[in-house]
Image (tube, rainbow, N blue to C red; front, side, top):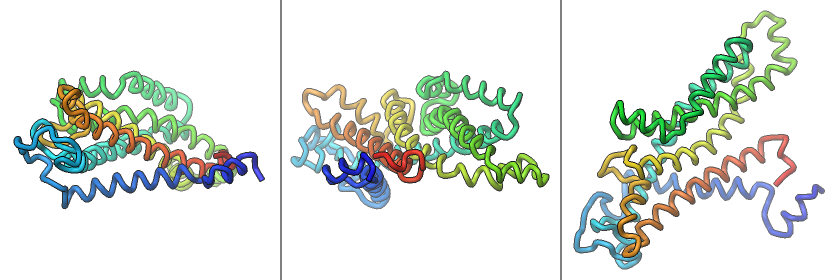
Length: 283
């Protein structure tokens, strides 16, 4: 029995507690986001001035905002917007980052040096700075947030995929494939990519949570979705003026962002604990 086993028994948590908890939270958020496409308690954009700044349960589950809009409906619709932007941005980061990272691992030498220095240059610009520069050229909007978050994630996946690919290239089956006359591209597609897919997927799960957090920050600054599209970040921005009168306006989207990011982080960590042999014995 490992040293971690008594702790699991004592506290009643299984070895994959984080995985199950993260999966449950993530499933709830995704379920609410999908449900918002067909139903919400009230139309998210509908203004009801007579019901403005009503407390939770007085008018709606989470109260209303300064325009009388149902906050819980806005949260549901905002979940879909945040998730869709985050997922598309991460897909951009995965596709570009894995392509460059595996190329760096396969080619080495000058090619690897150029790719890694390119990653360092992109990594020097945070997503918010990139969004400001892109907004100056294209204007604010969902495309600005997607490009900014996607660009910021490219060097993350370059580094992750390069490290994983280098480990695969050191295996005997890759050396045998080289001896058989296979080229670097064929070995990468046949052997490297299938073996690093799990690690990349785990990293992508964690990055989705971070992307949602960044998207909320961009919305808060007015660099993401434009009104009247619901957005958790803009809900927080709007709540600043009414913190003393209606604190629930800030609490609801703040909790939504925090819980969603926590869910994706727990899910990513749980998947790593379950499938990474180096952490299989740890909680």
